[in-house]
Image (cartoon, rainbow, N blue to C red; front, side, top):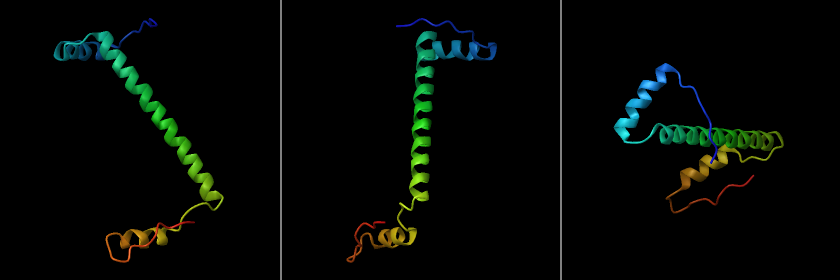
Length: 88
């Protein structure tokens, strides 16, 4: 486990101290949780951005399903004449 030193702004120190008492957890634990959640959120945003770039590339290259086909398919759900999943 690595050791990192940080300086907390004064507007964070008091609420953090209050949380340590309320949650009966150490500052170390709370800071680690916050950093862990931040890193996970950044990874998720990076993954979403990559998915967006791939989707834009698909559209640019004509790889998409017409919205009217999808709407008709969704409207058919639950009916006796449910349509097959639309394809490009």
